[in-house]
Image (cartoon, rainbow, N blue to C red; front, side, top):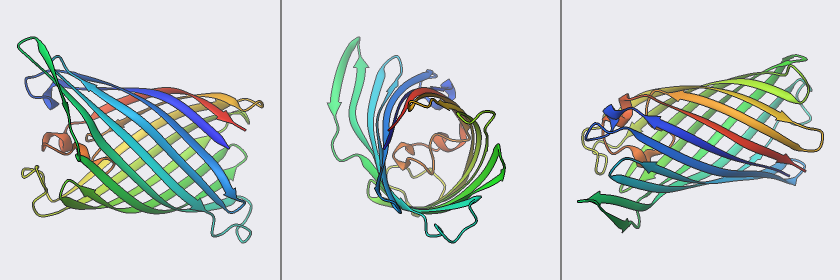
Length: 252
């Protein structure tokens, strides 16, 4: 079994927020993975994201669970591995806090969430003793408010192992989103859009199963294709942002 905990921060430029205010966030996360059978694994993650401006605060809870297997196990060259997975995730708005005339008011919002189901398949190829190249395709379907979205994610990952316990990885991901003709609450958002992201991660895991991970990524939009809940304005689709995280890794 393996587990990891991390905390990430995000900065959004003032152009994204009404009133020309900048926005900072904090997002602690706990992830885990366990083997149910030698051919099947189960994993999940939970996080609480806080978004803060000078006069508003938003708290969103994220949860995800996935079951995976390797259809090619035993039949592929040892230098190659594949992974087939089905995953469910949700993002739920828990608290909206607004400051008016110097006084904070809390609104406990119910029923504002998205739900996403994805099917994914990918392969990893060991091209040299220190370099691995992987790719993955993830079609998905999302329910957000009273609307739906069709999702497609394509990703490639190149990892370098300078030492057996160290890894440096570059991840490039593309997202395609096809929305209903009139998406609930977001009439100015286009029906179809493409988005991209690039990320870099360094991780280290000791022989005792304890390690560290530091990562960062830059995105062309605010989580479009990943968390439809945030698509409330057209600006979220065309304003880029970046995030960085640091965390602890555990394996036993």
